Length: 310
Image 1 (cartoon, rainbow, N blue to C red):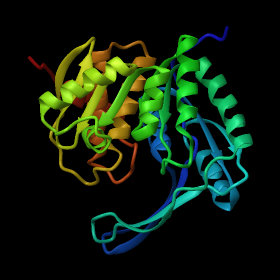
Image 2 (image 1 turned 90 degrees about the horizontal axis):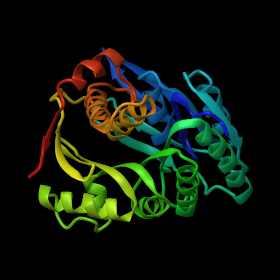
Image 3 (image 1 turned 45 degrees about the vertical axis):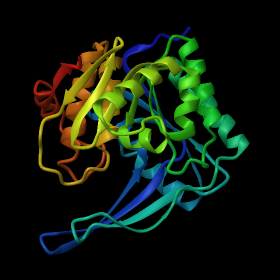
């Protein structure tokens, strides 16, 4: 049996996208081209926090070739499958300060042969890693929810620690497979009908329901409000440091990455939640998604408060 080395994380990012962003800094227009998508941003933050990260993804077409070449520049071990259909992409305009979508395409659904090959890569890398992050696609129809159920079940059955950041049917599927730590936003719970309102009492009840369905621990992010964590079946408010917001996107992904990294290094759940909250708080101060200096996150971690909810 392969030894799961301390500090190792596998990120299942089945369908990454090419991201193109136009910005204006000091009166000059800038064009930024990066590999993106939830799993990419999570992997980037994990690596920045010191984890050894293996990223498993499928790429295709001309855009897929660009994504693959850009991924080679990241601090990641990358396992890519060349898919038969083209990868997704988006173009955003941030010259006014806000993020305005110009055009976007989530990518075509993964074919059976591509998916079988990718599943094999992810399973092998996940079995070798302390923690596996299962990240979602840009659109729900690109990867079937059943894939997440099977992967979560297989990794958990062989002693892996599964961390998931999913919504909708993909969330339901991964709960059925079993997940050690689930991060979800309160908006996603409301949209799925898992919470009737955004009160603390209702969200705590939703967290308990998620635990009953298959999540050992739960973290609910609430935008600019304190998060709610369910650790050892005990609900807690997670109060994040207050910082000036540049871009709120990616905060939840950084939060998930912070949790996964600490768990991969042998840290306890409270330390993992505090680190995740600090990583998410710092990410909103930056233009780059899934980024943030490690020393700043470590300093902010000590400023995150966990308060029991009576």
